[in-house]
Length: 508
Image (cartoon, rainbow, N blue to C red; front, top):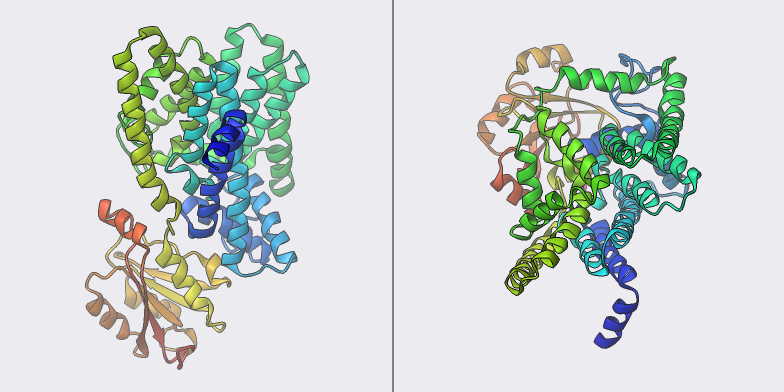
């Protein structure tokens, strides 16, 4: 059997790699529940499901009371998820967790294009040896199965960069190919606006090669794509084209310092860490060495990295989009260095670094592919969903300046909630909400994190004397580790207290 597998791999290396990628993505589909970041849950799933339920809970649509104008995000990807969730409910799949199995599955399948086109691009530009290594890394890099099942625009947009890039590298003189590639780049832009740095950089690299007519067609395809999915869509909703693009650019120019700010080199360190040293150093060396030969990859990656390194807001997920491109160019370049050196000592050192990479990668791959992220927040909402009469709850997160949003999608009901944080006056809140009347009191209070819990509970009971302990929702093991590594990952226990004046009996 082992020999049969070897023979199959020799004859079908790409599809063997794709099957391996599919296996680990299947594990992530089944086991990697929850969400990774605010954006993949609250800017995609929450919005789309609230539209399915005809509530527009977050006030994105112009006719919803409370909407203040165009939002900062394209409707394109969120709209696709709206139609997918609507289709699932049409087929009778209504449970939030059940729907997410299908959401994760379709994203896992989409992510296989990264493996396929990454391999094909490398094979076109280099030797089968490099293509195989690139394929295996894109298939099994420890973070990729987890990312592949998330609604993270930084990762979801990658196939729409690699696919057209392959078409252009594999150009057979058909001008329509350039138009279609530009259209695909436009779709990537519609999902994540910053990909324009990559598509623009690729176009610039071809201009260096005097492909003027072709680049004009590339630009035309790009314009057609964004004209349809942003220009016309925004005109329909807001009365003028590109309303949300204008809002997004204006917001980011004015809010650059409002989020995580870090040094310019933070992304370089992140990429080196994700690709696991010492082999990651070889990959980066190959990427730099290969810049003249592969300007079509080097130019867009450098533009993208330079912009994000300069821009004050630093979040590691922002540069996930370029990791496959760095892997492709870096491995091709590193193998070129080894060929040029023609040194047994360097070859041996490279093999050792690759062995270290795969050992460490495997140790990370399994737990990360199984990671149930933000488990406590998800399951606290699932727990409350059993109480069909719930219409108002409170989050008490008094030790923090900013609370962690509850994923209402898993509550399966769109209700009001308030968050009590450091700067919230409970007395004022209770007066404004009319807690003197039982009819206006919250059904539940969720206490986030354990610090001074007894004192905080007594404080709230002064306003809600019917409050009793119900249950504790614990985070997953991975969440605990992330919190231990960096307390900014607030993944502690959530303590649920029920207001007996509103709901006298615990559900059984």
